[in-house]
View 1 (cartoon, rainbow, N blue to C red):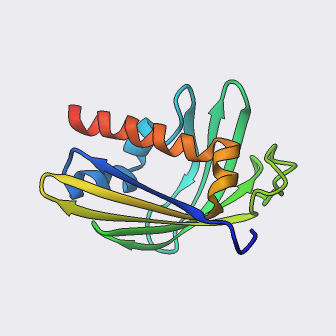
View 2 (cartoon, rainbow, N blue to C red; view 1 turned 180 degrees about the vertical axis):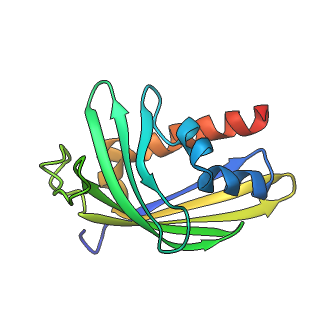
Length: 160
């Protein structure tokens, strides 16, 4: 990433308690309901949500195909913060470069994702920070996917 590029930073407001929003990020069954863009689904070969725990997931996209990711949970501070890595992989969990995974060559091999949660009245403010260029995230659709997933999660939380 060029030093002039802004890293991805998204803030989203949820109409639910901080505990409910945080729980949606650490409960594998809840993740399956919202953690994929519209029209896509997610499945997990492995998911251990604990510090040092690993995951191996696949977003199944009927248009663009499967996107395999492996990562490690680095920090879990309920209900305030969640930090994890994201690396492109193949179905076997072996690291993949951006081009072989069907991504733009500028996409980083590993992304650090930090999500913070703040209770503000009856709402929860979530701030997502990723170590990927905002411009690259918008070009690839990753930025738009986060917004769609957050909207999906907010709908599920307000129905629950």
